[in-house]
Image (tube, rainbow, N blue to C red; front, side):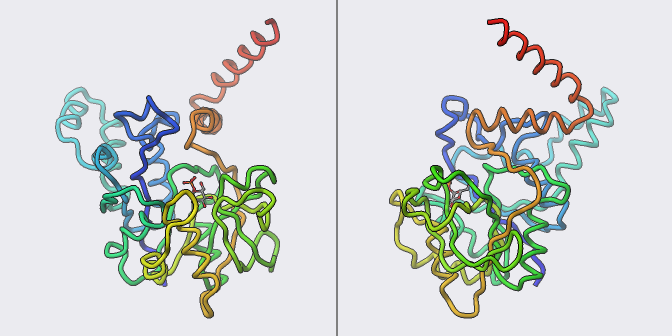
Length: 294
Ligand code: G1P
């Protein structure tokens, strides 16, 4: 069945970015000239996704507003003959249909996904976590949807991480069936390095069946006292007739969820942009020279 909907949890408080995230959702921080959330929405639009469901919370209105019409701004841009900019702004309204559901209590990622149950309905769907951007030829979620269709099951994006970092991620266990693809038997949320079944970490893109909602409804609190999506997936992977695969995506994975990561993400995206590449290189060369001179 075609994947039409993406669930995008954005209810988090963004504590790693405080004080910057006190009044502005971290998903609205810019990467070059677009907020993180817009890059993610463009990824969805490029793959023919029809609807993105934000799992949101109090104080996160800016995310929905960003994709809404802005009459007075448009009026002003057109009055000033800034038609190119006006067109860019208008295209935001038509990028992908946005709906929003509320996560009223911060009970964990598994709970956040469960909050989208009614909005998704009884069809397979994708999940994108807002902390990870992927610079790739083919949009990351499109790669995962294709893999899920071809393999006939759920698909979880993974990447290899250093052995001492397994406690930052969900870690998967399974058998390699072809290069970059494993059939999964077990998933563990943030295991200590000595307990990790592998170094393959979940990286924020999933294609899942609607069956996961009923599982999450009954998933107990896990790591960190929260209802973990990884625990729900572990239950799903153990069920007969619900094959689950991990997929290593093509492209460069970037962490937009921490200050240093956001800086690196901005630099990498600016280097991909003709308008900025040469200037960014100059700035970096200058910085290098200055640091050598010290
Ligand atoms: C979440 C997931 C984890 C995954 C990670 C990827 O953790 O629970 O399994 O590896 O995202 O970014 P969080 O970073 O929200 O703690």
